Image (tube, rainbow, N blue to C red; front, top):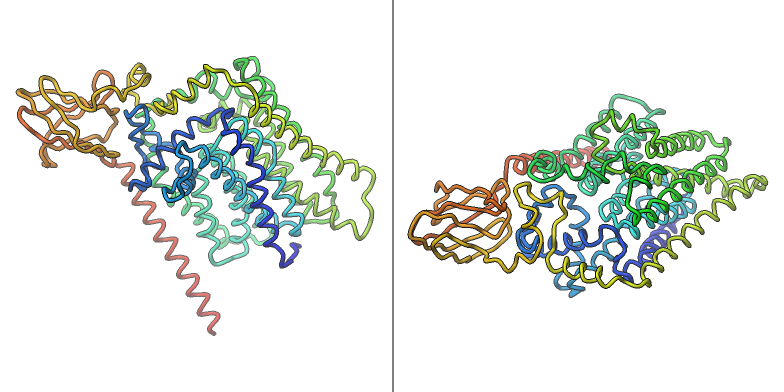
Length: 568
């Protein structure tokens, strides 16, 4: 049974401090060694610029691609960047480049993941074991070393914050807490809008865990509460999810599943020969981390024993999840990946480490609780002591490995050419290939496009009078019907109004290079171009607003019913 000590706040403080301490190298080294750091840095910076300029959800980043614009956030996950916006608040006067803000956001994500793990594990074990388990969750090698320091998989790193909170909310739903359904739906929707691949991998675990918790109290009302909570979560995230899933044909998303990014070339132990030499260190680290963590799962399974029935059920559940997670990362599971096209969208089978991390955290916390419970009654057996030493040695070695890797990369010499490329990309803000509109010519997305005129018209003059996200106004003067070309990428939804007339029939189309092109009549005119909200955006927003209203209504009814019971 969970310990009801009143000193839980100390654990929260320690977890928050640990989140800051474990991410100190990120602040000091500017993440330069992370695979995806520049992409997330540029997105974060441009996302925040537009947000604090009055754009509440910057789907179209107007200054990406040297000012050509980018539709990245019609598809990419907004929640981590919305949190990072808090550190871009102009009043704070922090680093303009955005490195510090990414570090602060990463520290927040790590601390939040620890708090979520603590709340969840407290439902399974005593508070001391839950606190230690939460700390272990924070320093699990795939979570900290791989996702933060080697890959800088920013959104997947943030997803670790929501998974344990979902499991915690599952307990609240089963316990019948009044706010449990809405809490579950909100946290689950945050996971959806943080990292869809992790959502896809973790959702079966969440469903099975709900059923596992319901076994002793299985009834139709409880099942309906769980189903309603899941439906509500998808409704709350619909304003992101529907446009992201229905408009992928507008970009080059197929790149994400071709070549080296295909799932078949990213299984553990069999992908070294499929990948370039500069990836071998990362892949070797990944193989070592996965095997080590699974061995810890086996040790914890042994340490838990069978003296406590509830612990025995939990250990069998999480050990099964661990075994399945590892299997799905191996070449032997390729038949499942081939049979399930949706699974292939995950790209990298090694992402199953997210689920493995959660499972091993549960096993570790239960094992620690078993050890603590056994101390007053009897001594640990020799085998249990040996297993505990291995368990402790593993986490110590992982921390040393993380520290050594970060130190080596932070203090190593930098290739001058690499430094030049970094500076150039920080200036031009190139978009990753998969999020470029499919009409854009590849040659257009390289070089300094800022040097091109913002607007050009054949045989006349064009002057931009307003340049905002999703809205551009140009004054034109031409002697004959002409084509106006805007230095902005074409994307479905761009419309043009002539002299303020919304019903004017101006044709907007992609130029041969993929820029916005408009046919304008002769004379002096004002052309207003607007990137209109399409049906997917409108439908998603309507569903999310309706879902939020339903969630608020259900919560109000529950609290009113509770107050009536209390009054009687």
